[in-house]
Amino acid sequence: MPPIPKGSTVAVTGSAGFIGGWVVKLLLDKGYRVRACVRDADDESRVGFLREMPAFSTGRLTIHSANLDDDGCFDDIFKGCQGVCHVSHVSTYEDLDYVQNVCSHIINSVNKSESVNRVIVTSSIAAVLSEADIFELERRPVCYEDRYPDELNPKRTPERQGYSMGKVLAQRIFSDAAEENGTWDAITCCPADNVGPILSAHQKDMGPWQHNIETMLLGEYEQNGAYRPWMTVDVRDDAACHIGLLESVTVQNGERYIAWSTDARNVEDICADIDRLLPELGHDTPEVTDPFPERIQAREQELRAVWAGVELRNDRIRSVVDIDFRPLDESIRDCVESLISVARVKPQLREGFTLKQ
Image 1 (cartoon, rainbow, N blue to C red):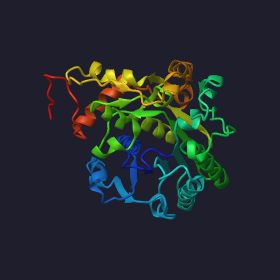
Image 2: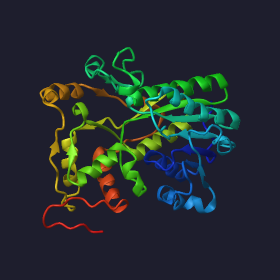
Image 3: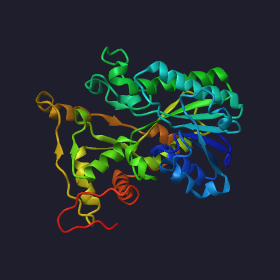
Image 4: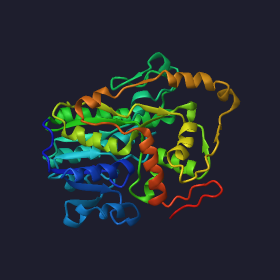
């Protein structure tokens, strides 16, 4: 399908969220008209930041209540749109039948619109490297778009890996539906760990990574599962990738693209980075605690070695989207400053430092 016309109308599900909010903002910055889909358009604590965007005052941005669980609720919203960025999460990934039903609600409304010609589906890096057996990463360490988790592993069940399985399933459902319809295509974006500034106070709790940095600011943090490093993308770059895929003339239905900077950093280093990047703040860097049983702790070096051998690639998305990924330092700094200024987080400071709020 051809890319959507510049200045046309795009619907964004999950617009109140961390990623969705930035997709809305950058679409508006590029001159598009946006229909922001949220669970409750009257919830000022979650949509107030959207109303404060200048385009809301002119009507170029409109805000719509829509519940993913309700079939047909997107029918009127998608009508007249040329593109859809489906960023929203479902309420659970452990029930794959439920995931399929929610996908069908979006797909039915896209088909009824008779105007949408491209859907960008937000997936996750978990659809690339979330392994039931971490040592599968040792056997297949190169992480790129054609890599999928080992779906034959008996430990890969919805109870253990529902999020990863649900994201892979959604990608395939949308691609198959687009191929069957023939008038629109579905392109999947698989973001890494999103780090960067929040746009609204409620977003500090809407994703693990900004919440993790908040926890560090408050003076405590636990080691990541299996000693996994953060594998990051700035949320603004992630949003730009979504829009770049929406506009691309070369992408094809069913393709997926990984959005990440290829930066990877251990938790204890990120904790220390806050003070390194913002010495004026005087953050009292917490010691990272290790909650794992002794049998896991005994394998720490072995597990870290597995992660150190993983090769991260982003050449495919850079071939279709004109982007220079921000360094992680910038993402951490801007995340910290937004948590303090927007969400009023009060960090634990060393003696002699005071917060300027």
